[in-house]
Length: 173
Image (cartoon, rainbow, N blue to C red; front, top):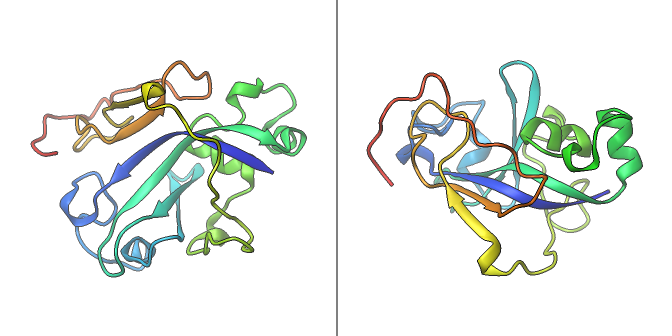
């Protein structure tokens, strides 16, 4: 199966109030502290799995949440996992759906993303800079206004922006 990533959000570790690593290293978030190139997978609201690519220097937490993607290969398998009636554009739209389409679960937490691993991250087709948009993160209550969301303009797989009802003003990046 292959999915092209169309939407991400950055989380800056201990400097970012919306990051799981904000209050320091714990058993749950230890993968975020490096090394880069591994998956940090967690359960969101007890309902669905979310996958992040660890990006920081070993010992310094940071990760990129994969919010959405477009199925390139394996639509039948994604549809089997997500439901036969799900529109193609919605198969991997949203972080929980992305993980469900790929079959990513908590068992993948800490997985190495290098080629040859069970889940890999590889370079795809280049994206014209004019199509990349930057905006506030979706659904977080802290640092919600930080411009850390990156997505492809007009792509139907990109999730809708939603401000958390608990959002409050923040200072920062």
